[in-house]
Length: 81
Image 1 (cartoon, helix red, strand yellow):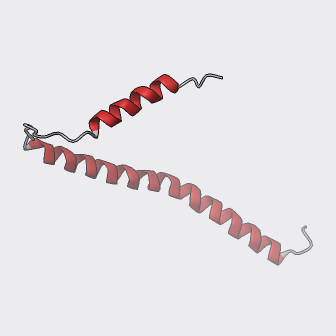
Image 2 (cartoon, one colour):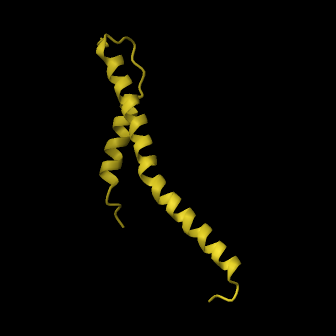
Image 3 (tube, one colour):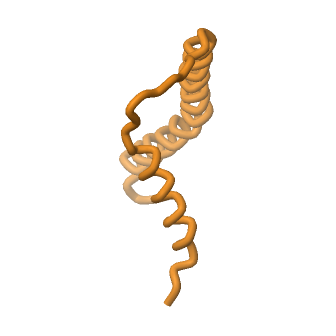
């Protein structure tokens, strides 16, 4: 039986292996704008997470309210009427 993603897995594994090989010397330049870009990514991630929490918080409150109201009704009317 052939694994359908086997070739992709091999290619990705080889790529990761090559990336992890230590180099003797690296002549690289990090642009000063890189720090600003990374800060923007961090802030965008933070605000995106806060927005997602805000959107889903209403659903969580609604579910908690249903559970609470349902249990209170059950306690007040044990006959189920």
